[in-house]
Amino acid sequence: MELTVSSTVFREGETIPAKYTCQGEDISPSITWGEPPDGTRSLAIIVDDPDAPGGVFTHWIIFNLPADTRQLPAAVPTQPRLDSGARQGKTDFGRVGYGGPCPPPGKPHRYQFTVYALDRTLDLAAGASRSQVLEAMQGNILSRGRLTGIYER
Image (cartoon, rainbow, N blue to C red; front, side, top):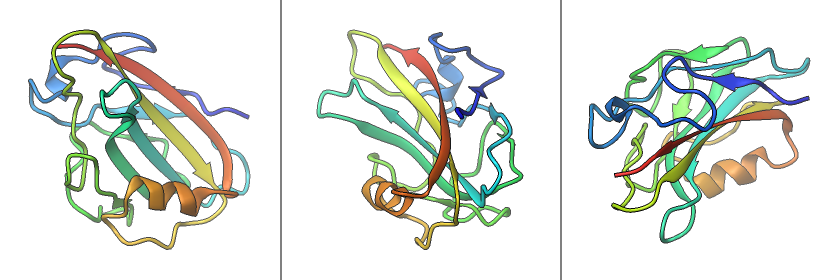
């Protein structure tokens, strides 16, 4: 079962508005997803750019979202721990919280917003790296879904 992931500010394959990038307010866009499967204990989101010159570049990591969460509003605070108990990991910008698209000038890059439904919460501290989160999720993913936007400078 795949999760349906959407946003009110861009559709699959469309351009992410500048407001949500390093050329704008650099705030996270609103993200919504469908009902996860039974047994879901938490959710995680990883946003990355697979077209970055140095390989996959991570723009956002958020994990331990409560299982009943179905959306994140725009402008999620860039703090290690959210009021819901969710934690944010460290991005490839070297900071916690969302960092918007900021590709080098040239060709468009894809930005993948992947939502994971997990059968447990992750025993990781805020500030965890992408590799730590992916390792902790291994064998615990019940479902996933993805929304891809593009952006170029």
